[in-house]
Image (cartoon, rainbow over all chains, first blue to last red; front, side):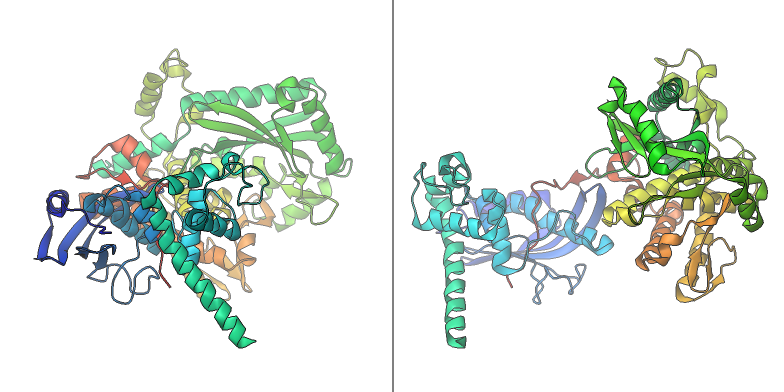
Length: 228
Length: 399
């Protein structure tokens, strides 16, 4: 499945209208590169951020991979844990971004809703040493945290069970809820997972993460078995 | 001295963060009614406000998400002396009276040191009164304090309030809110009321529903440079420490009041708000050098270090070290001086910067929403679009 829709040229035009200091500096059948400056005029927790950043965005065509973004002038410190060694920025878990754009990726909205808040969060963190709206844990725990918010669950085990139900189970409204409450699924957490069971696009998003988690669990089991 | 436009705009924001005329009127009515109720029902006491309501330095509460409570502190100084009754017994006397009232019993919470009465939201903020039970201090204790004090004339007003218990038993501890007010007013009253006629006219025009004429505007809403500097620093402190998520470690208002008043004592009574603010911040910053030393004082000697301990003596109570908490947690003085540095950069140094930088600095000082409410889009080419808290993305890392 291709992430980037066919109207990428329209989306580029829209993006460059909104951010006139950006320009396309590479475009072929496989990838598009957009570089330049974006000016941020946002606030978070009543704190202002007015700053300009030099960025590069890479969009891969004919692929299911997310666009990547890097900040090119060191305005975001290389010590910041959400900036990789190659300068790329980790905006959010993929599941959060993919769910947002399940009806079709939109480059402009991605910048407005994910890129800008990343920089705003960074500036707040750099000033105060705290995240204004929290951060995700690294790796799979961060992914689980995202699903906890979506499923409205409190613990990791229930959340994983919800993911497994979506990927391997089927909807049975009178089955006990996966959270262990002894209520029926349809009267408990069922309403939060139904969208994934009814929409194959949403289910595919969860399946990716489930496959990754299963692989990690299998590796952990192999490791502990070898240790014994 | 004539203020420039930026300074006048900062003062407009400060006026906006002051207690509103409506809230002030409500607060006075509520605490007057509460005091009358207690006295009518057998609590033989002198009941009076302390803290910011007494000193004229109230600022609106600050929170990023919603308006918090205004807190009004009342002292209920019952005519016992401390040897005649225990804190627990006095608390019970007052509690019994309050719980007999249909008005107060449902709003009442209490702990070992005070009663809190919560009132429903009035306009856009909610309001509570903290009643601190108190008794007269003993003559012996007053004599003891007079020997320690540089201002013995203030010690006469000393009272005893419940100490926060360390075990099961609560004892009395000396306090002196009336003496403190006397000291503060002795300095503050020398200073001219800022723009008195203009302020009174503005309050009257904005509150015709409660004032029949300009003469009805209470003097308690007039402000001097001293009071305005305290308000600026208190609000800036609230915003800064809220953003740091360290609200519990912010300096007590008593520290700010005392430092500003001590600085004001040595300045011209016609000093502008901004010259006094600069003077205060430069003096406090100089004290920051003591972070590195075990003892000593700054050129202003407002905050000192004695044998490794931070000391800022309460002018009305020689036994009360306002900087006590600094000696229990090293982070507190470190954060304090970082805050002071931030206040100076944002409120003093930024007055000479570009329009956009000035706007950003006052937004960092007072919060984006308050500055926007008062100044609109002045000094900036773009108003800021907030990143929503509930749905905002959170940064991650694969591994």
